[in-house]
Length: 327
Ligand code: BTN
Image (tube, rainbow, N blue to C red; front, side, top):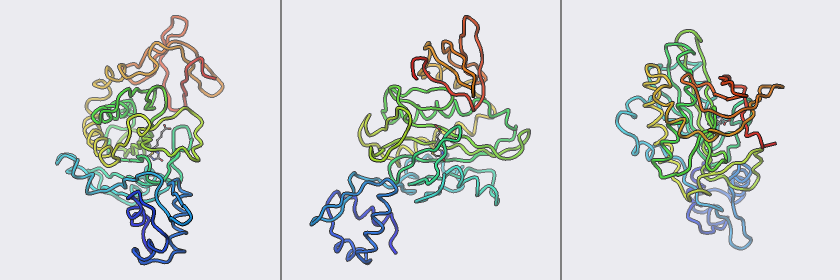
């Protein structure tokens, strides 16, 4: 049986190929090809099928490639990566690394997982992260922290800053951040960050930082209940391999130094990137709502809200923030 990658590479040239031709070139039956294409289509990879012409991918697909990613990485980054796992499908790249942690692993170095497709991509607050095949970036990296959970305060905000830097390096303009961990362009969600922690909350713990960036989200079948965007609509084709390498490079520097620096070196840049600075917002915690003007973040990463002249610091992963005029 041929792999999804082989078939996708074959169909990536933009031309139509008949089922018979694909079968002949790849040494598999037409029925097998048809079944495989149907499956990929169901996973979010748009395939054009035209009677008399055959099949082609509706859009150009650049598959993730370990060797290409490595060519973009510095020697320093490569030296701390234990393994760069590129998988075709997984439930969630965060889960993939968390599973591996259960059964070992060399803790002194980082493991990275990138997937073409996530069947149960996870977002914040138990939400699903829509992860169509071969379209976006689903990336996770694990790291060892010795100082316990307290040393991680504000980490997701710092991750947002370095992702904004990676995007700026690729000439992506207008990126902003929404507390605690949304990456926006012109007010629409481009990506998000999800951090899982395992181990001793007071001592050594292992974290997995997951990053999802919409690169080329096909408009078909996308059921996302908030305003979203992708890099393709903003600035055309962006190489997923290059983007992955840029983010990995920045994340490694951040993770290697965060325990000693904390959030402090990132606070000023976070404030500059703050999408909601000076805006009237509602902060929702379960049944409770607090309204006020957004005043950025405190040095510990808490959201600062000016509510009736009183500055309040708000913490916690379960909080949700929205502009007051949004319903
Ligand atoms: C959010 O904004 O709600 C966070 C989204 C995080 C999505 C990424 S995709 C890679 C990693 N694997 C997951 O299951 N989730 C994160």
